[in-house]
Image (cartoon, rainbow, N blue to C red; front, side):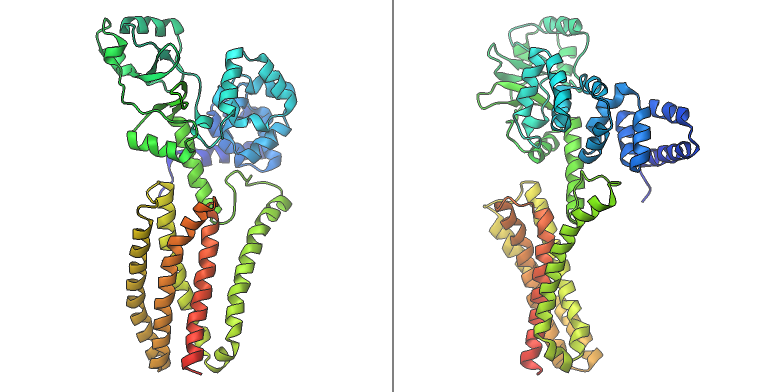
Length: 452
């Protein structure tokens, strides 16, 4: 698979940057950075070792500093803030949109926050307070209070004159929000309809009233699904009294989707998407040690099960050769079910109404595959070791483990979800433990009973 143009550009920018850093050509670095978007600079900063990162950060255009701080991950941001003068920080974040400022609010020093908030207008303070009152991974945390609202009883010509007087619209404005005098949400007016409809027509006759609004407590993942289902560029956020609070735009949703993809991938290895790739060795080692310790415990558990049947293995050496097959097949089968269920949970496609049906379906799939591959493995084992009884035993153990793997793969993520534990993080470890223990126990236990 070829690399995307964006990744190719990042690689090229990084190569040029590294060459200029090695040669000490600081003026060339500054010129290179001035040609890049803040998101590209953020990507470069995350790709640089700490010493070079600080050099590049000092050469970055101060006018872009705030946008760059929003784009980099949490740990890199903290490092950049630590090496930035307070006055420069105030200037950098003071021009940010309210929703962007809320994203990095907790990372800023109190002295900087005090100056930034004091310089805000009363309206912007209220907007910031509104966004900060919600969890950052919710619709309320994603929303931007900066939007254009209109009344339903005016003509489109009046709306057009109003927009011209503003001279500038918030980014990603594809629709205007219609509200009553109490700011209760009534509907939307698409910009396209505003431009193509007779200017003497009223807003009430032109607006769309069936555009659903989001509650601020809705999770970020549910917001992303909402945008995907309705192909939206922006959507309104309202409180329980239907008062318009703000809007969410597609650029924020794209960030949610990317962050979720990164989190899901890294969580499988016990890592955090906000970890700095070039963090100090001791810090990185400490974080990963916890995950390695958990895996070590599960490995000892599997080894303990094997140790119970040490005498059996000594008498039938072939068991030591064959038992990884049972555990491996169970692990793969269970992982297939686990990933399917985790995806269903993420997409809100699994609930109390269909969970039982899905469980029986996965058990049937596990049983069918278990019988199929048990026959194959039994035949190969019987021919290899010239023992039909050994082939029959591994076949039965394989059926047992694949059924248990299907059961575990379906129930583990659902159980973890009820316990408010992310199944993407803990599900794999638990599943591997179950399939290893059951696989070894069933195969070696059957061998102990029937072969010894």
